[in-house]
Length: 195
Image (cartoon, rainbow, N blue to C red; front, side, top):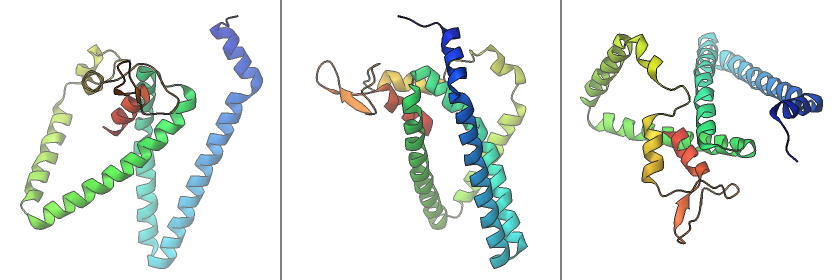
């Protein structure tokens, strides 16, 4: 038979699945903060207190900035209807992709700046322009947007890539109706996470 949403919520509460998830999450956060404190202390001993404080400050700032990404991920998971069993896999692939892309952009950027010093002026002008547009933007611009609607590039991505709306386990691509290779919603979600 079928089960109602209220019955499902009641079953989840009875199973202690949510409290187990929260306790595991708190343990993971505690371990990563403890590890960063140990590393900061090691840097403080090896390179001086300023280096340890710099590392821990950067860790706290980066961790704080990553919280907004969680909301973006949740929005994308909802839009692409990613099953909970595949969300962790999707996030892990997204992290690996982000590390690779950041590394590539850092090395390309360093090579470009090293070979052409005036490029720094272009980057500085771009940052000033981006800062100005962010500060001068009207606060009411976002109020008209549908909160559950993904950004336009996500819709365009789904239109451009040949894709299916069916999942095939944890595969990113699968055979389409005509035998061609098509992207699964998981692949579209990972590409959107990377962008």
